[in-house]
Length: 234
Ligand SMILES: Cc1cc2nc3c(=O)[nH]c(=O)nc-3n(C[C@H](O)[C@H](O)[C@H](O)COP(=O)(O)O)c2cc1C
Image (cartoon, rainbow, N blue to C red; front, side):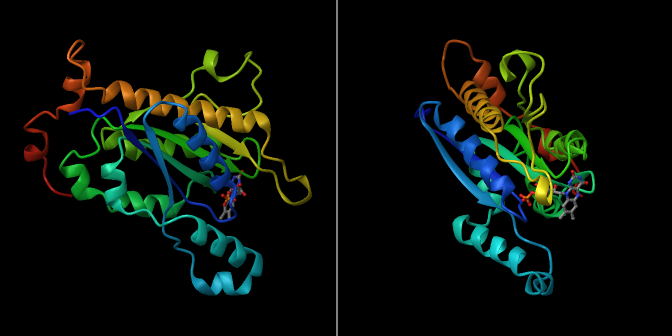
């Protein structure tokens, strides 16, 4: 029975806090859609404690993130109706901490528990052209493998004209800059993040609406009955 309520999970990895800023803005956009509850969580840190002990600023950032955001469990992903996943660009790809979180999902994949769940991706990078789109696409690869439905930001919706200065059609991209050239989290960055959150929540609503008239949502919600049984375990 559809209650009109839905849960969006925003899960991210962050070393320095940039992804947390984007996550909060995506949450605002998602909450604009009626009946949407949002949870923001972080994935487990994999960098060794010694590294943080040697760098007080990194340690402070880690402690702040751990204080503000709970660690995401696999169940959080299963229970959510729609998901946004965020990563820093690390050497032109997505962070290993996110990969580790996703690599726990073999049994979930096997049972098809993420099939037809809408998903959006977001990233932060130090440099423009530092690998943002590659990172977003690499992250989409396992998500599509799970049967999730990618939700991006098409051009006419993204900005007022073709010369947009934030985001990408594939997801939110926040270019943070480095050191003295560090960039603010601009109003355009925030706007793109809110648009993505809103689109994700809207698509989630369409897919789980449970109405009797169109039947599209019902057929989307049904897994092919033999799908999980026929698959072999990894
Ligand atoms: C290990 C590591 C690798 C990185 N590799 C890239 C990269 O390939 N391209 C880039 O533009 N920025 C790179 N960066 C910079 C981060 O993507 C950037 O600082 C981002 O804003 C960090 O997000 P956070 O503050 O949420 O951790 C790297 C940072 C680290 C720590």
